[in-house]
Image (cartoon, rainbow, N blue to C red; front, top):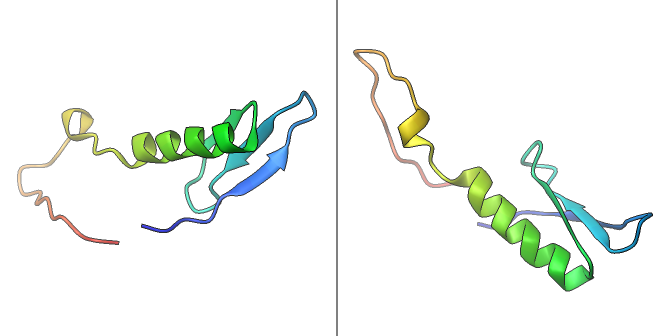
Length: 67
């Protein structure tokens, strides 16, 4: 999966990075490389299935799709 991220220098030093296509998916790092590595981890966690927390109705169907 290919996602665009926005990397900005932080006022406090280091970098802040966020993913416009994934609302609330944001991270930071002391360096550009660290920020990019951290956002990769944040994206993986953001997209991780939450099967244990899901509540389904009696006639619900789960379908896997590729994006």
